[in-house]
Every structure is written in C-alpha cells, then in structure tokens.
Image (cartoon, rainbow, N blue to C red; front, side):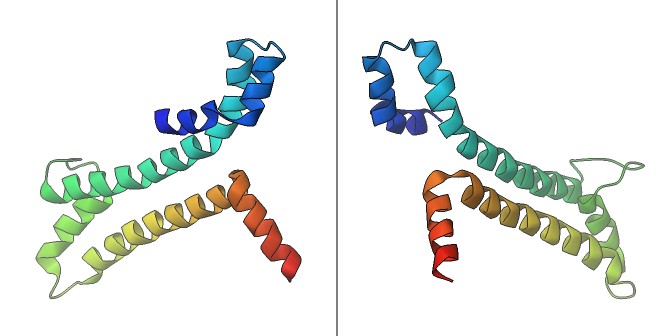
Length: 130
C-alpha cells in the first residue's frame, strides 16, 4: 500500500487540503482512505482465492486438513486412487476449486471496475457509446 499512498501524496486534493490548513488526520481519513479502499478490497479478495489454492494444495499433499475433516484438496487426493473406476471423485472437487477461484477473480474484476475511479470512467464512457 505504501507505493499507492505515495502516488496520492502529490495529489492536488491533498495539496489543496494542506493549503487550507487541514490537519494530517483529516487528510488521511477524507482523501487517502477512500482512495485506498479499492486496492485494499481487491487485494483482499485476490488473497482469498490464493488461500483456497494453497489450502487445497497442502491438503492434497497431506500437509493440510486431516481426516475426518474434509477439504477439496483432500477429496482430490482420496479420489486419485479411484481414477480408473470412479473418475468423478477427483474431477468434481477439482472443478469446484477451479470455478470458485475463477468466480473470485471475475468478482475482483467487477470490483475494480466499480470502485476505481479511472476504470469507472472508462466503463461509463462505454455505456454512453451504446
């Protein structure tokens, strides 16, 4: 987040707030935090998808959740023994992992378009052209 805050450090809004005598706390909460909300939300959602992949991978290797608990990675590992006779035991958990992470990434794309002012202006411009 530090590089993102540095880009806003020389922003005209912040300079104007400093000129009129706004204190640092007001500048942070009125100008910086709203501009940082979008990147923080996007990073958190992307990290959630990464956490799903890491947990599934560790469980597949036997280092994650142990039986009697269940996880998609553990289902993949258990279904590997029956790939010749019951392929769906591994395919459907793998498909669920894929679809969940894909939907999270698509949701992040929507969040970026909806919350970032630069992308929102492009999106509104595309809507006006139709």
